[in-house]
Image 1 (cartoon, rainbow over the protein chains, first blue to last red):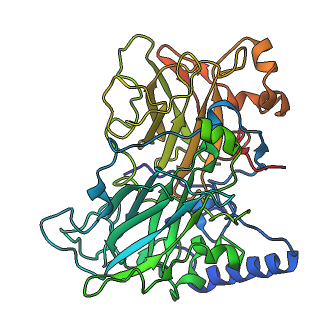
Image 2 (spheres, each protein chain N blue to C red):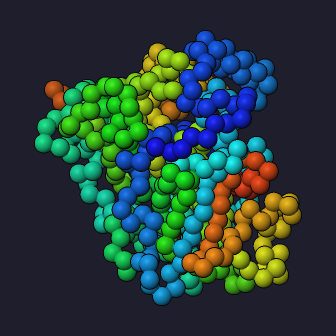
Length: 266
Length: 184
């Protein structure tokens, strides 16, 4: 484990679990009221969100510097069939046995800000098991490890930008942000666009999670419409007879800087 | 048509079993002619190392060409793909084996594009790691020319015996200049 250097007051260790849920919720409510009163629309997650304690020392305090992308930034790395085995899109077949939990399919499209599909590009996912436990060695939550579930998947989008994963529904899990802190169930997504600047790492949530209001990571997106863009939709058309439930979730990256003409001639 | 973007969320603490992979930090084999080390630390606002960060780089080849080749996830050690990924260690250090990128347009200041993720960092950060270059070259770069003079050094690597050093400071007096590429 890393040597933890005690932070100087008033910043408590992010793992101290010093605050109660009531204190965290009061901070969330205050920031929510201030946002509502501001009249602004924030599309992105805030980097500075004190209820998420470990963000306190890890957010830039200066505004990002505007730069017109140029050269390498106008392009993204290329991943191909050599990089990704199609079987990596099924997280339920990586071991001898079937993983415990609600089998589900999550599928959707990766689009750029102009609504164009992001074709043949890498999508990576990782998640906890049905009991809310990650394989990761730093996860000490005393929920059972599922020997039939690692919780890592990859795929390439198809020619229309579609991705599709088969997995099981992850469980919520406790963390040490504050006393009795629990994360809503989520699947981590890592997505590339056609340009370096479109890189996105985010989390997909499930509809109606009772932990949304209590979670400072989800609440760090202050705008409800923006938050809703991280919540998948139950889709009975994706659900399969006697096999799995189905969810639909589209991912929209930031706008492109390269023109369609450059894209076609590339 | 303009669609509202999907917001980012932190990479969290538990990406280590999922995102790093064997060879992610090795854009070229160590010892290959021209191979250099690009390395540094990720530091928080107290100056403490960030041991749970993920760093990705994306760069042109030595001739300044943007490579569009697959093979970054399963390297064959012969194809230069220009992209790499690694995590910081317990002391907040990261290290890549790569080559120095050339200028993508003649006379431009070459740089490596860098993405940073970490537990506690709610969205990814983008920046540039410029190669050390004569002042005339650096001064002609549009981004470097637009950055406050007292912060410019945070974007420029320094040389050591193996290659290039680039520390990433998420917060604090020497906070790295991070970039916003949204249209004005």
